[in-house]
Image 1 (tube, rainbow, N blue to C red):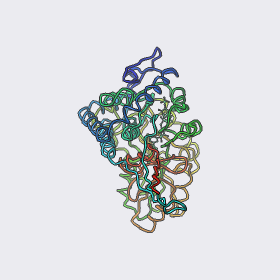
Image 2 (cartoon, rainbow, N blue to C red; image 1 turned 60 degrees about the vertical axis):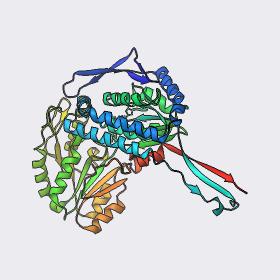
Image 3 (cartoon, rainbow, N blue to C red; image 1 turned 60 degrees about the horizontal axis):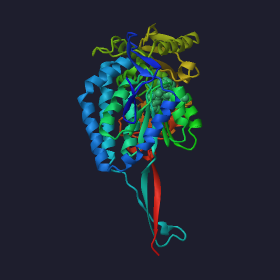
Length: 470
Ligand code: NAP
């Protein structure tokens, strides 16, 4: 598939293969862009700015709704392509496409609600006699970079609010799973003037880095790992940056919890998308008095998952993004076992598949739970009481989301107040998001919020206009 720059399809002499992680077959190739091509995209996006700013919010909203209809018509096609390139079960891909439609719809609605406010300058010294108001202005050119695990919806969380706020965009899709994003940008390009949406493929470390550095880009909206996010924050200079980074989300299960509900939370939270979810349940911190019963039931539920061809609707556990990624998970689990952890079920790898794994006797200082392990792992950490649970939950550089299972409102409120995370759910696992909620972590999990309406704040700048009427 070709890149899209200024409305034209552009290729390159260097191509990269996109591999289906399920069978190792080549799905397609994408161009490897170098700096000159990135410069072409920057120029095209800057040239298209006036075409977009001259459009009314009414027209932009309608055009985004047209794209909603087009994506809805191609729901199945997009989901199958997503499964081909990511390896996630088809039912999960359908959910991602449905959420993408929802995200786009929210942006189309919100495009009509970009308000300023009147500001009483006469409340300040010497401000008498002014009439002043603010306007929210587009930033200019937004670079959007998303990871492989939810490439479509996470990219739409950036580019739909960006365009709704009258910014032009340059998308750098993830190299391992670029195709659904590229196909979606074609739909946008059918509706908007040439250059409003541009796609540049290639290595993040080269072309992504170049785009982030460019003085002719006004904003970087990035979702990905902490190391890449830190690099971007250092290189972006004075431009606005949103960083949605990794997570190491805790799930606290207290002694009065509804165990069956909590088990469901682990199955949906630790094994979704083969555990490759930023807000996945990555540490299960459980009161020792109920831990034996909990792990027994968890093993039974885990063994019901069906690992297999992700295009088969009965499959509930697909592959990881690559064999390399599965080997990394295998190494992290083996390291924990060498240090005293015990596998209760799972623990085996075959090519890019890694079994859903429940691992007990995990201590909070093991690398498996200190780092973000991106695989289908449910590590059990047993604790004596609520104080210890909260202390361990916070013992991480991350702070994306958290879940606590309890019916004790005092304990629930202590967790809500004391856990350092962007979201704390009670009686729900961290692996839950609606596309209109403010989403974004504390600590090294990022800067800024997404969630359409909240992304609008990040995609605009405020100008004050003051009329001296005296
Ligand atoms: P990654 O290695 O950081 O890559 C993410 C994206 O950044 C890719 O498109 C990559 O391009 C690009 N990139 C790499 N180096 C770059 C550079 N120097 N400058 C600019 N762009 C660069 O992350 P990943 O392994 O794909 O994704 C998994 C991570 O994303 C996990 O940590 C996960 O928790 C996090 N994540 C966070 C959220 C959230 O909303 N908080 C959501 C999903 C995932 P290439 O593919 O070409 O290298």
